[in-house]
Image 1 (tube, rainbow, N blue to C red):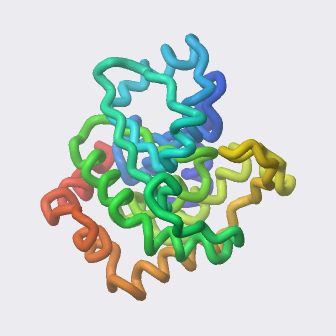
Image 2 (cartoon, rainbow, N blue to C red):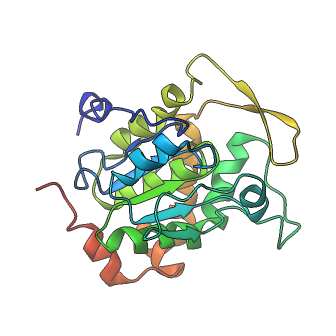
Length: 233
């Protein structure tokens, strides 16, 4: 899988859904694994068009506080919503997230295993899923990187796909301001290859392999085996 082949998967132009694209990167069947920012700004047209993708499970990696302020708009009564916070949830703990991106990524690797395992379980069901967080670059980026790596995508290709979020979010020219869940202005920073590499290295340091990481957080060997059968036909 080359960087050119990865870049050929277009961003999907659905109103008010940022950074939406097929994240299969040639290692999963097309239309099986999607990634995006949150769905809280969906228009009627956007909800209809997103439903047409056939998504059956939405894995939301945000905190309870984020959900309370920016709840996802439903895209169908038959869609299952899984709320799986990847970082310590302010609603249930006083453990804070690192502000520095370089520190945030290995921290996510340590705290996000249960959420990533839930995404594995959803994908193993064989129906299309959508994984998202707030803007779809950090929490989503690490989760998708694990799923792609499990399917055999080489590390350089995983990182190349990860970096596409900078284009999808308009961060390819540098940081941009945004309002957080408390209404405070913060800065959204571009994703950096070294940060993702540090998170994956932390997983290997703590668990040895990605398989062990996921098994230690609730995934089953059968589910991991299924993921490796969901290749393009």
